[in-house]
Length: 96
Image 1 (cartoon, rainbow, N blue to C red):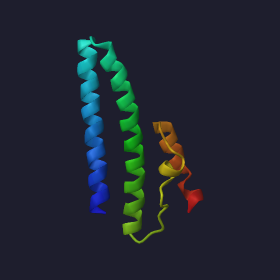
Image 2: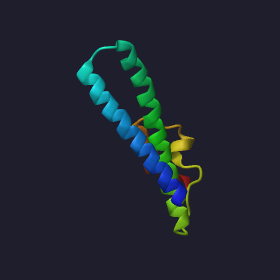
Image 3: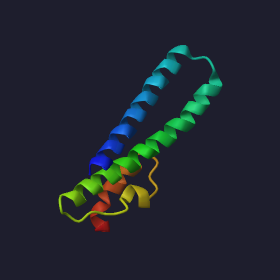
Image 4: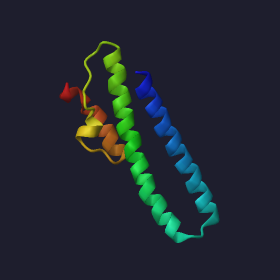
């Protein structure tokens, strides 16, 4: 479980760095090409965060001796948004 928790922490930190970069880019507001690249990377990082959260949750549940959904719903449903992640987590019970 230590590994899944570490991966989740790494994804959170990557997302936080991206958010900080976005704030700096907003202040500078020059280099429109960078803004486009940033949007592409932001979408990818969001997706990684949702998938990592799902894996972390399921591996944690499994480590507690409970039935886990492997692969997690976020992977199965190919979640790309926060709303999609919330819906996937709610659908977890149906996938057990």
